Image (tube, rainbow, N blue to C red):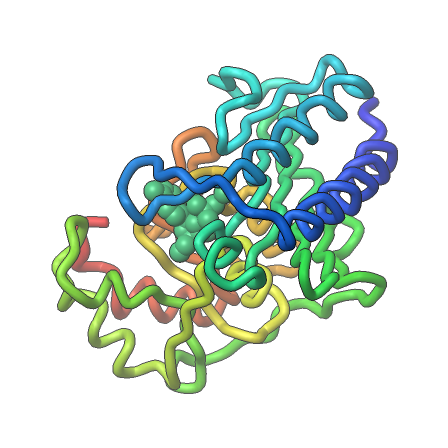
Length: 266
Ligand code: 2AM
Ligand code: CA
């Protein structure tokens, strides 16, 4: 049987080591490149951090596979066995511009089932972590089960991109949702926005296009707390391809899906 405690202990140790390296980089000059477009950034630190994790995982767990954002891991085409889904720095634009509001995100799956979720807010020293079935924690504090909210009393995590002209959706589609909510926020790190939903700092997070490493860990933490994690059609998230995402407490998820998302071609 897979020893989840052992995996979790190593993963947490490596996250702390990686975060020390990331913090050391603040005093050095970053090498910044762009990926799919001019605002899709990657730095030498994103790449070095991913390589660090891969080296460590391969040395202790040679039969585990790794799906990493920067592409140094394995060519993962299925979720058989143990698969680590890693974003070495989620919120790279924040890392570059702000030196805060970014996280290391690691979701560990066994035969397609989420087992361990780890999201570390490096600068604030806040580790959100869950082992499936054993509760979710923020550092040493147990996070309570998610409370239910109505849209009119909820804060939504939503990027302004989706309510201005964009390539993916009609920008008027989400306007009624924004109007009915108490307010919107956008933090620029999907992993952090998802754990903000988990801890009730915001009540829902929705966006049109994420990759598996942006939400793998968050999915495990949210589900451990009784929240819902789906795409914008209300379907199960695709852990190999990604797509749209919609995280919320149960009641709010039902309300938004039923009243606000049924017309969209998400
Ligand atoms: P990143 O910083 O790891 O790239 C920003 O709103 C959020 O969306 C971040 O979590 C960011 O992750 C993610 N993101 C940015 N560009 C993306 C892209 N082209 N595809 C998928 N996710 C992206
Ligand atoms: Ca990243």
